[in-house]
Length: 257
Picture 1 (cartoon, helix red, strand yellow):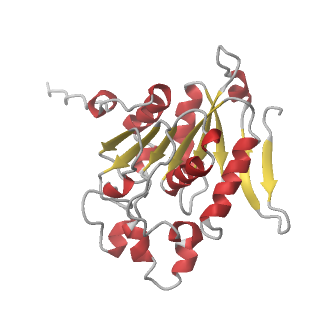
Picture 2 (tube, rainbow, N blue to C red):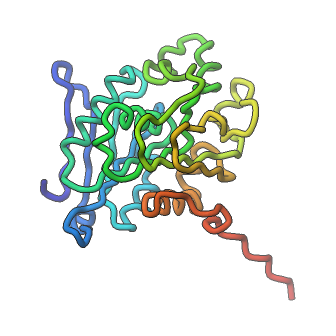
């Protein structure tokens, strides 16, 4: 495939765009010594498009990864449909080591993909703020009028799960936040430590190889330098760094003359 191509895979019948694949000439040039590139597929969360993960993408590109953004309909399509399209998206990527990075419900999508098609993830997987064990906020929003248009089909299938599990032995990291600033405040707030949208306990995944908590909220983790370093560190090493090693300390204020 040539540089600067935007490939859109269309659903047969109604012409709906279901996935997008973008890559740049810079990405094409980054190849591992063994001749195969390291690939990172980014999967967005509910209501999002993947553009909110641009800093994660930039961090990984600078680290030598070819990055691809997977877009899916998080509201109008069921979970199985979206997972199957993620499967098809990965299968048409160039040969290389496939790593997966998901934010919020995107991490749930990745977990489901690995449980069903483990051979597709040949590298490591990482979830950021992902509600594996149900979602308190989604359940509260589901009580509101017209919730079918806000919550949608995919997350409705998983928001009442109590104990999620990774069924296949993969290096899978989970990054959570504990700064409670987010949409959950509109429906009364989440009990216990949370990132304003997802509770820390909701991010626990049985079978995951590592779990780390940073002082960030749900979307702040996509921009916080410490979290971006953790993403790169986990994909490279298979485990997270100590939080104090990746979070820059503030410089002491200069004394007035």
